[in-house]
Image (cartoon, rainbow, N blue to C red; front, top):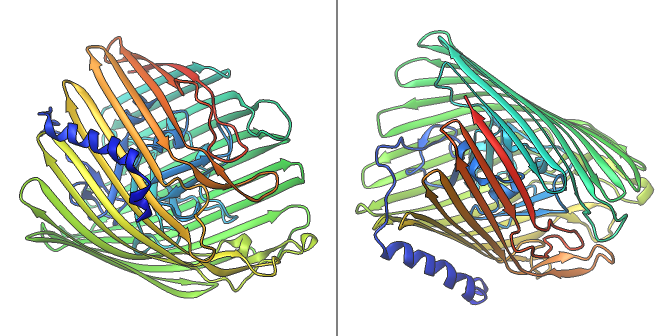
Length: 610
């Protein structure tokens, strides 16, 4: 396999880290720590160690310690995740989860789907880290649980905190290079059976020059964000929880600017109908207004998603549960730009799903099925099955197979550009995929490691047809991948290594998929020295295919390795100071051909909690 033959250096580095972590007696984690729970995988709470899917959970403390400037910077080291920003902070950023397309990952905020209906997935570059309490990531197909878009995986960004105290709060102030600044305040508390949290922040920077072409000036970025959550326990049976978050962002780019106003709202009524049966009624709404003023004029788009869900969990016993539900979703897009004509604005989708989970005995088992009835293309069914087992106390293995789909977006279905002789296609079918995966997990001598091997085949991919005047389902792709991780603590140093290997091909053209490096390595070394802590991270990628921004022909973007330094000093339990130096070695590199990345940067933040 090409995936193995071209990766000797990266494999050697990762295996060295793995061997080091498994041969040295290391300090283990606190066995009394509460077990991590994830809801995203099957829409029901499960122990992270028993879920038969590739998962990652990032908590608020990890976000704070990372001192990342944006969500892409925070998640770049997660296995299987690759980001392609077209410039600095606020630049359009695409996520290619496990090599799938940038709109093949379902992005949620507090469970609310962030689909713009105009092409790109959720605007990850604008989601402020200050609002985030926790991030749940599931890699691999999840359409049989969540519906459209979950071909590469699902990311749920959670802003609702788990409130335990009567009252608490935090203040964060940051200043850095490029005249960057950030101010954030968070308040939360509980009175009786009622809890409330508030969070507000303002971030701005002069930025960098995004593009090698166009006007030569810095492209600034500004973001104001706000979130609030509320919950009340009416009785042992009924409870209500609600969450609202929003951001208003302005991002400059060469010869243009983008203004984005984004809002998400969710409200859940939970009823414990019996000791075995819990039922949730969930109302969700997402709205985004986007104004792009560029060289070719003004483009306005307004996307709105509304969703009503009824979710149920029935526990037969401690080992067996069944989760089932119904989703009704309404999507709307209003799009206007020079030379565009919109023929329809909305569509509906009804979905019904069921998930059976067994966690006991010689085999763990998960089966999920879903059917979506879409107003445009009719019925579409997806499914997933996973089987796992423990081999002794230190080795766990599971294998899974799943199908997934991506519904065509509303702009491809309904927006014509007659002035440019290009027309939408209302007869487009969903893009479809099937994946198979094998995972091995082990814990020995105080070290943990995991190996995931997968293959994804995607059919009916949407692309420009042979006449170059419309779109059609004419392409196919195959992606083979390996994700390897190793973690250990040696002589009080925490070591984490992640290696992602991809072998991908557009099977219709015989060429590699764009902007997907075949090898990505992430290393993290961290240690505490009393009140002082230090971490050094490395992110390295090999070269990848791209499009030349001048002649629109094929091009190559070179590989790179970027080192970051993060240091912190704790004055007390309530007050700490943190410093992040990004691109410590001042490496010149590109991720997207023709677009610049940041030189060496520095940010100093003061964090106070009360």
